Length: 378
Image 1: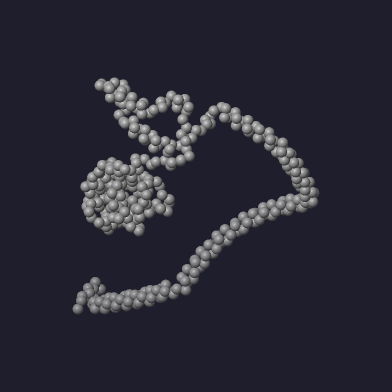
Image 2 (image 1 turned 135 degrees about the vertical axis):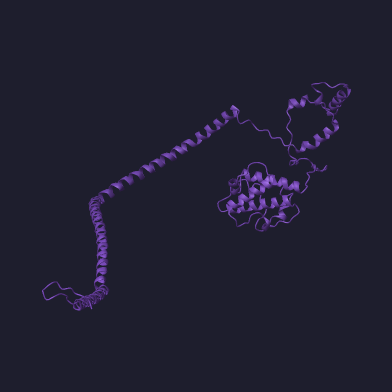
């Protein structure tokens, strides 16, 4: 259907070449997965554009989605477009995002059908060439001969024309069809059958093969194998015996060499064992010292943190001691307090002076008889 829509020239280009018919059936490799999904969504966009306007040229920029959009967004827009053109069935975006499988093939199949309907395409009846044979002829082997059973050949009549003529006479002489045998009646000219047989006979190649399941064949094969094994058994036995003797000698030499090596390297073996034990002891001591070293490092870290904290506190206190601003404030406060005391003393003196003047201004009143004097104000 894509070929009928002329997608080779209207859609394909250097970036999107024509693909085989099973391209969207199987899963691609991991490297080609993004390429297959891109080809699928561009092909769907082209078919949707044909469903809207069959004669319009393919323009990727007019699609509902762009090639740089996220796959989830492309699948959502694709589902909307498929529903708008009337694609049947439930369409899942997660299946379309894979770019292959039954869902993708079904969508492409229905889109192609709708695109052909929009293009007013009509399927015509198939046309066959009368001169062209309906099947390919087999290779002709001029040396091949047709094998016919002698009993069957003896039963066949010598003149085939007479046999076919009798059949034709019998079929023509019947006025009513037999309900059971009328459909097998021959209505072809016997001479045409004879000519066809003469034409096809040289092309037939009959090969008679024996039945592999026949028990006689198995028995014969078993006897042949037995004779072959009886012939080969003596030489094979001699060769195996010689090989066994050689292997026994080689094995004995290997054992002797192994014993010699063990005697020569026995002292070194014991030395290796003692050194291995010493290595284990040193390894244990190393592990213990390593643990102690790690513990010391942890203690050093804690002491360093405490030292840094004390250093910070001493720095803060030294800055506090060297700061003279509080002393200046105290001096200012003392000066202000002295000024306040002076003003208070001055006010007290003024009040005492005023009180003394008031007492001096008052005069005593009374007689010489010593009666009470009254002070009056001038």
